[in-house]
Image 1 (cartoon, rainbow, N blue to C red):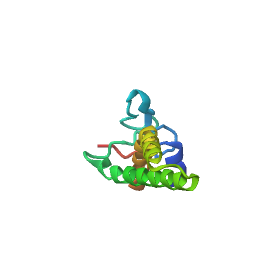
Image 2: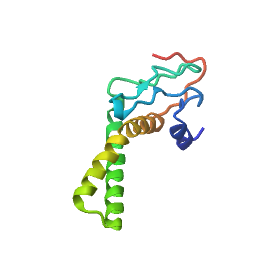
Image 3: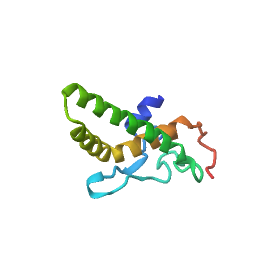
Image 4: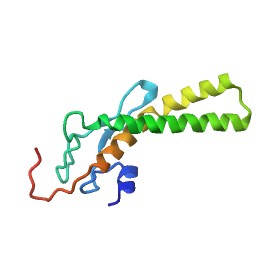
Length: 123
């Protein structure tokens, strides 16, 4: 399985079958995504060590900045006023917050993926 396909499908980096997140979350009801502890098929741990996903916050930040810049540029091209653009940026960032959370964690998990053998025991 490739890095991009695992991230886009949201599946285990080891076997590619189990979904990493059991709940996607919903920003409108303030519900955050919930991850499985480990893969149900190959027993690959999604929680590698304490603080493992700290770096995913930087990826989420980069995604958010890219989204904000995109909305701002589209607003400039459409001739929208700055106050309307500001509110549009706030709405887009709020609505994509759970998506950014999931994608950044999936990117981070797959970035530091190490292939585990079938007989190897997880800590």
